[in-house]
Image 1: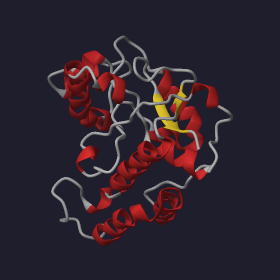
Image 2: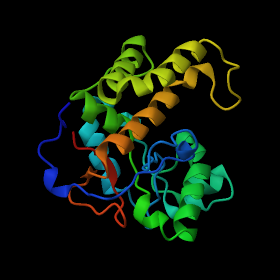
Image 3: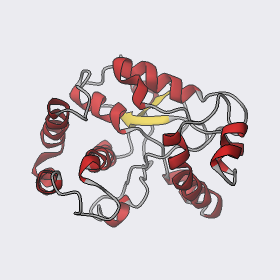
Length: 223
């Protein structure tokens, strides 16, 4: 499907990779793996790429959470993080902080990771592949639309993922970390894997012309 944000071909980046936390463990066939957790801004204020992602998604813009700043990420508890962050801090963003710390540790400790780890957002990727807004994924229509998007753009290699989601959706005890109501997170991981596999390092960025190796930015497929 075509990208829904005009022609951004000039800001494609080649020869890069996209990593999602722990996804390499389940997607061994791909040399590129998507990451969905953001790096925090070093200064006060919201990140431009978060605002651009909200604008890109339109009615689904609320699925993009403002990234906690670096002081909030280093905070010892929720109250300290709320006091340190620009405009407070929601509970969902607080829940992401441990994952943000893991990604930051990787970037700080592994030089090669700074050239191969990109940030993305599953809803941005879904919209880019689908070509239009999708219904909320919490409803049956949105859930099925995302499954169809994965098969249409990723092929039968994604069928085992969808079979697993269907099988476990009603079984809340299927995994100690992913409850039945959160199997949509599996679809999120799958669309990031598809983005990594199919784009061959050729991404569009939010904001335009950002360098994802050093600029706060969100990459997405330029299909």
